[in-house]
Length: 432
Ligand code: UD1
Image 1 (tube, protein in one colour):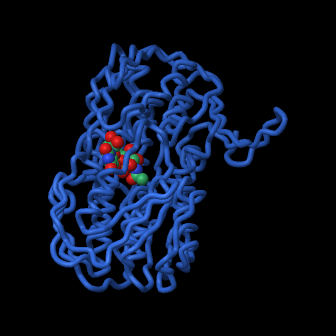
Image 2 (cartoon, helix red, strand yellow; image 1 turned 30 degrees about the vertical axis):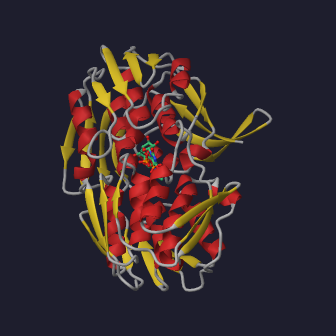
């Protein structure tokens, strides 16, 4: 069993480079299925979820290879029309559902098992299904398998009842080769929606308006291969920004799009942290003791991202005063609070609101990652805590953070990845 061991209390100094965006890669890799050609995708993060998505494409008949680190070539000529994504693969990641839209768009039929992913309450896919149906697909389920088929998809007006990242992207995938015009209204506006649209347009699609709440897609007959570079990961960057804010010090985070980080920067500045934007970097300086209390509400983009909520809770757990976080995207995203309480945090949860009474410091403890971002929060908590924190369930963290030990060690954190056999810890990455 592998764990992270962190000795807290060290300030963070230096530079850190951000990897390609997980949630963009997880939509763009399946999007390559839409052409019958070779796509070269750069800035692919080397993380568990992305590697699983590549395995799924190979299972469908694609040939893939890393021609350089983080540069993936996908040849989709030999994908089989009737290939299905089996349960054991779909269960491993939420984004497996993008194969429904992509296979439906290319072949007019798709078969994918119900997706898995991090648990933070009920995660319905009704908006995906409704979108496919409006484009003319028949949807059926048999056991865990969802099948979609359409003799010919026809463009339609799709109004999303919920602002959903997944449903917006899935309908985009199904619509790019449909006949005529598809208009997605109340679309999600996250940076990875724009990235997917740019990738599709590089393949010859006609997608306009991504990044606003109305996306117009005029169907084209064929798509071709292309070379494309994925945007930097907004949430990875935000996680390191909050880490520096909480632990203290000064770090420069490179290879970012500062505009994507505005909602996070705004809350850090409100907490008394200095944030300096460069062209493709942000510098975070935190030297003034405890952060100020603040009120955070998660919202779809451009609001404060739900995927930064657990990390922000750690920062506010040592704030001067009482802070409030309300989670408006997911029903059940405070499960990790119990772990923070083990470290001395004073947090009460009432429904979708957490009340955080700031304490002077956290204390190291054995904790576990309940999901990907909850795991990131445990890392930050370990960095600020007195003594040793041992984080279990680290596979969740490695689903979404590339080289996390190396990156944190590079800015001075005391973190190692250990393998634990019968109580003995053997260091396998990082230096104590
Ligand atoms: C994506 C991200 C996830 C992030 C979330 C919100 C990926 C792989 N995951 O998840 O990290 O936390 O966006 O920014 O990109 N909903 C419905 N019906 C649907 C779909 C969604 O009611 O058919 C609801 C959900 O229950 C939730 C809200 O819409 O309350 C947002 O969900 P959505 O944006 O779809 O999240 P994901 O795409 O699953």
